[in-house]
Structures are given as C-alpha cells and as structure tokens.
Image (tube, rainbow, N blue to C red; front, side):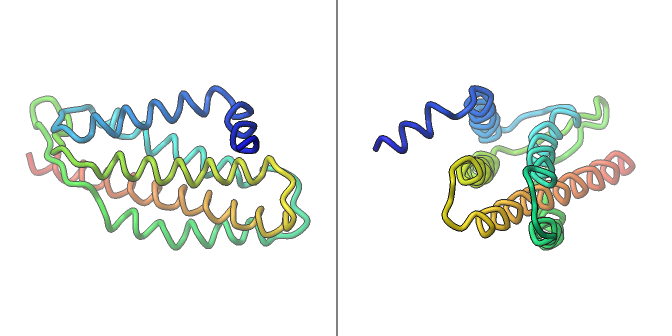
Amino acid sequence: MMFAYQVLIHTPVWVWALLAYLVWQGIKAMQPRTIPIWRALIVPVVFIVWGMSRIGFGHQDSAWPLVAWAAAALVLLPLGVLTPRSFEVDHTTGQIIRPGSPFGLIRNLIVFASQYAVGVISAIDAGDRALAIIVGRAISGATAGYFIGSTIALLVAYRRKRAEG
C-alpha cells in the first residue's frame, strides 16, 4: 500500500491534468458532436508526442530499445489506419460530425494506463532494467504508431469527404 501511495504522490501534476483531459474528451466523445478537424487531432497528437518522447529517453547501452520502438510502431500503424472512426462532414462549415461512442474513452484509458505504467517502471529501480526499457519503448512505439495511423486515416477520409461535397 505504501508503494502505491508513493507512486501516486510522486506522479507529476501534469500527468493528472492529462488524465483528466483524456477522460473529459472520452466522455464527450460518447455523445454525438460536431467539431473542427483541428480539435479531432488534439488527442492523437498528444499520444503521438508522448509515444515519440521515449525514443531518446534515458541512456541506452544497445539499439534494442529503438528497434523495439520502431517494430511496435510499424505493427500498430496499420491498425490505426484500418480502424478509423466513422464521421460525416458538414460541407458548409467543414466540421466533422461524429456519432457518440465509448471507443474514445476506452482507448484513452488503455493507452494512458500503458504509458503511465511505462513511466512508473522507468522511474523505479527495476531488477531487470534492460527488459523494462525495451518493453517501455515497445509500448511507446505502439502508441505512436497507432495514433499516426489513425491520424492518417482521419485526414485521408476528411479530405475525401470534403471533395465529395
């Protein structure tokens, strides 16, 4: 219990603010809404930056962490491209009209929890630090790859739907 308490109190405030924002966005995504394209890109950009931030994080004695990051990114990038969320475009305003779905909230919480766990593992003195670093980079790469893919899918679909109107 003391370990969990120490982890919680040593978590930077920005992490809790990010969690609150991601939960808020996920709850909002459960209702149908109309938003500008740039707003639809905020959460993906946050996760892409967070995933990419771990590439050069800390001292690395080998190339394996970078290889793990790149491999995971390449594996999940197509998943992001192939699982786009449905939307329509308001052709007068150019805004995206999305149906409500719990997908965003669930996705945000899973990705946040994975990245948070990576951060905690990186912060403590793990017995097998090399394995923890490689797994952490793989999770970060998977996060970045998935969201790069989903951003590509969103922008391509948006452009296509704008051209149809």
